Length: 248
Image 1 (tube, rainbow, N blue to C red):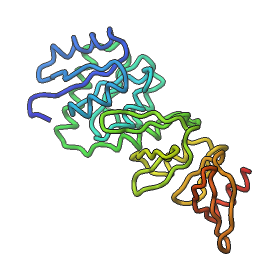
Image 2: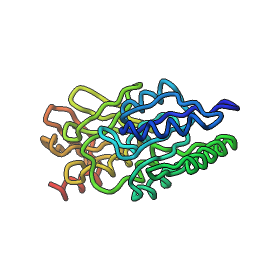
Image 3: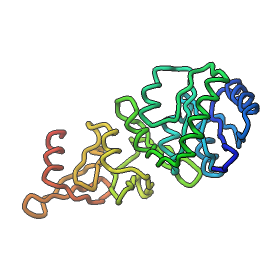
Image 4: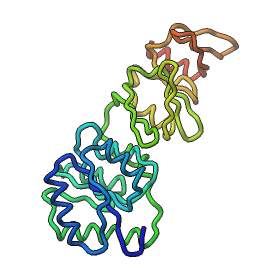
């Protein structure tokens, strides 16, 4: 961050809400509004291209909500959530937001939030791991789609299209037919968000969509291989075999 300028990105699907924030920020010394975004996809792209110091981020938006935007950010930095729904307050602080502003936002409340952001940046506090924390802040229930960052773009993968997921260090490889999508997330975290009636962790490194399973073959004592409908093969651990038996 510049010593004198706080570079801000405004993200809200409602133009009047963006206009109000823009008006307030115009009167605050040392603040530059880099851009405004009307949806989460625009926000992810703008963050990648503009590298702001601070995000003013609505939570309830079409296409991508605020927590999904945070999940997709490759760089961790201060976020001030701005929303009309106060039931999200706890979630906002669970992801270590700088502050939480309830609409309609007052100029005084925004000033206080900006001061907190400057203080955090000035102290050089380690940024929270927003992707992991945003995931933990979500409400329960299995996801129906997986979001993957591809440069400045976002790919939306329906979970029904996923054949299996493979662990690769601190990332996962999501296999959809012959296409592989890489996502910066641990396998255990993603597996916890998938429908347990459809996806089974058959091995420490693999989660299988059981709808793709054609057969199980024994190739050594207590060692099995899952044969997929397209002929691909995945190792199945003893614990994974037990999970499959319980489900099938």
